[in-house]
Image (cartoon, rainbow, N blue to C red; front, side, top):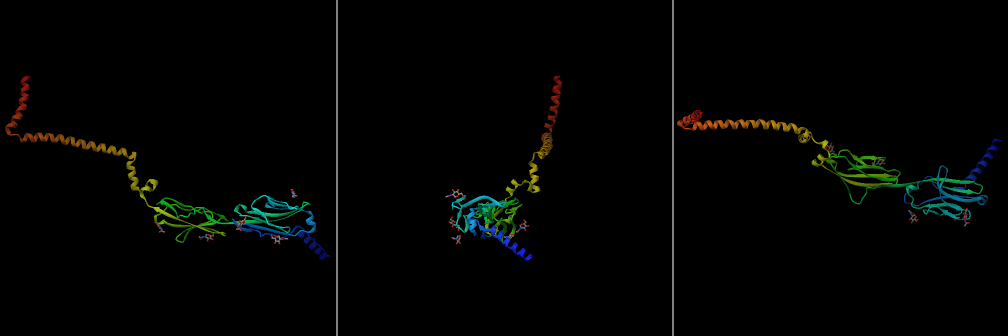
Length: 311
Ligand SMILES: *[C@@H]1O[C@H](CO)[C@@H](O)[C@H](O)[C@H]1NC(C)=O
Ligand SMILES: *[C@@H]1O[C@H](CO)[C@@H](O)[C@H](O)[C@H]1NC(C)=O
Ligand SMILES: *[C@@H]1O[C@H](CO)[C@@H](O)[C@H](O)[C@H]1NC(C)=O
Ligand SMILES: *[C@@H]1O[C@H](CO)[C@@H](O)[C@H](O)[C@H]1NC(C)=O
Ligand SMILES: *[C@@H]1O[C@H](CO)[C@@H](O)[C@H](O)[C@H]1NC(C)=O
């Protein structure tokens, strides 16, 4: 009894399976292609006499959430073909649904499907994932050797913008030594450049589709004046002191000191010259002959006497 039930179940299962799947071969899932190539998707199917009687149309397009989202091509029972894109070519026949997508890009990635629609609103569908791999491409790459100049102590960014699918890893090397290797960070950031960092740096980007390389020359110049202007905070304490001397805050004490010194020296020279004048007079007096000395004294007295006389 159980065996009979199992037998009928098996027949029913085969029947439904056969009824639902007219496809006898389908494309690879996922179908992987390099960007720029032509991709061919082929579904082979077998239709019974009854199927052919009810067949309405064949539909090809992009799918999302189990249903067609962008119809790209439809083939009606009467043989009329409607295409929504110039990049898609029908290469099929009565037993084969075959489509060629020309020059695919990473934007063409997604789920693609084929459906057979019958008049009793019965549909058979099958979808595959299309993955487009793109080899890495470094945007900075140029025929000339790239050169980056930086002064010692400053921060430098060696940039390396990479496109590719899947997201490539980006590696920075110098003299065969890996400095950085990451899929999220592609730029090499040097916080403070040193003179011994001058040299050739290689940016290498890679994924399963290939590898791209780029070389840049970093020149670190140790120019003191340049760093003084751009980075006053990094000046030596001695230089800072010099800057202070010129600043207005410390200028006032300098003036005060100068004024005091000037006054001291001024007073000194004034009194010195006054003293010299008296000593000169004295020396002159001493050099006079005795009688003249006396006369001179007398004169003074006589002047006094004259004045006295006049009074
Ligand atoms: C893709 O198809 C075009 C014709 O549309 C052809 O010229 C080209 O060579 C094909 N490319 C490849 C990689 O087969
Ligand atoms: C073929 O059938 C479609 C509808 O399925 C119709 O739009 C089209 O005009 C028909 N073409 C011819 C040549 O009969
Ligand atoms: C239909 O095309 C496929 C390849 O696209 C080929 O293998 C098959 O033999 C063709 N069938 C007929 C009946 O032309
Ligand atoms: C960087 O790391 C990846 C794995 O994440 C590896 O495949 C690749 O070879 C590394 N590149 C270099 C230059 O070391
Ligand atoms: C570069 O010089 C610094 C000191 O300025 C030193 O610490 C570092 O090891 C040097 N690096 C190389 C590669 O010579």
